[in-house]
Length: 191
Image 1 (cartoon, rainbow, N blue to C red):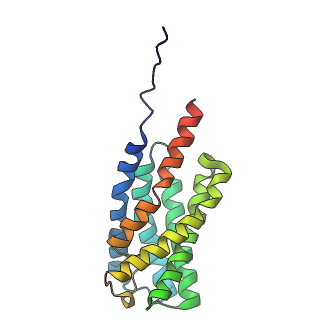
Image 2: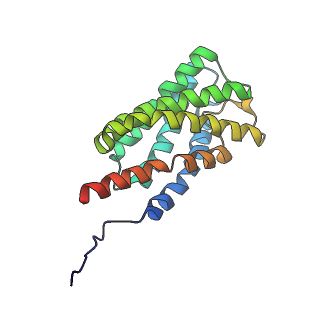
Image 3: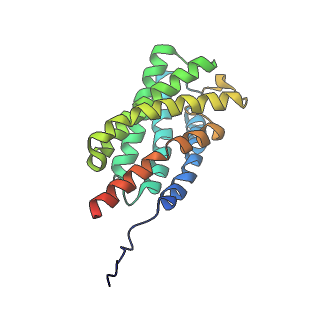
């Protein structure tokens, strides 16, 4: 008779998803904090500071959800803040402040992609070459987040750094593949 002993560190996928779910709140919290600090994103300077504030808030919440399988707090929060700030500066410098649905969809794609590139660099140690695909789904998810936010009537001309809570819910659901991928990688390493 064989007894299989299971490690107490192995968590079912549901635990990873439950930890990821509340990260949606960091989007409106980070966006509001940025708005209170710099006002609307209508200049490159406001985009830089607002992107850093929002990216740090989102990064901190996501880092908490990804522990213990994800990158370190410093690496993840720094990457998230820098990635969002750089992308928001770029889109603001090139296109100016968005005021239409099409403009925020583009902003979402650029910001999601920029954030994804920075986070992929932080994920590379854990996921290897698979990390390089992360910017693509994140760009699509962030575009959708802005579409959802616009659909519920949020005033786009107010110059937010990130979409609202309804868009954040959609993005959180779509990006739940990340904690699952990190869990699978960690479980595979234990086998």
